[in-house]
Image (tube, rainbow, N blue to C red; front, top):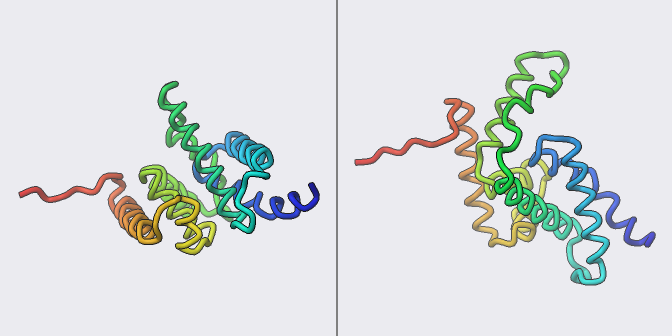
Length: 169
């Protein structure tokens, strides 16, 4: 058990960051991390020996998050942008606070697959190959999702709208 703890404990802060980025609720994020760790411990003997523990844990967490989304959709609406009101102002700078709120709102506007790719690569500093392993897609798909996510986030920051308008002839 000490060996398992030695391998898993260093991953907990990153799991918490990712969970919070997905849920925007510290309590729900902590619950997701706890569920992830419980699932990992229960399935420890079935994991691939020599496999990447970090990718395995993130895959478990993402799958649990997707299950949560499916349940929430069936149950009704979830907390919206007003959840961003509780974000503290970085260094007492109101402009930075509004910028952070805009970025978080832009992240929320992204489709889940693009948001996950962006968070894994840009926030968790995973390589494209590591993100591909977590998302269970080819590396090229991660690159494509990341490109689209950056484009959509950039457009959101410039216009304040989540959808990209296309010219129809």
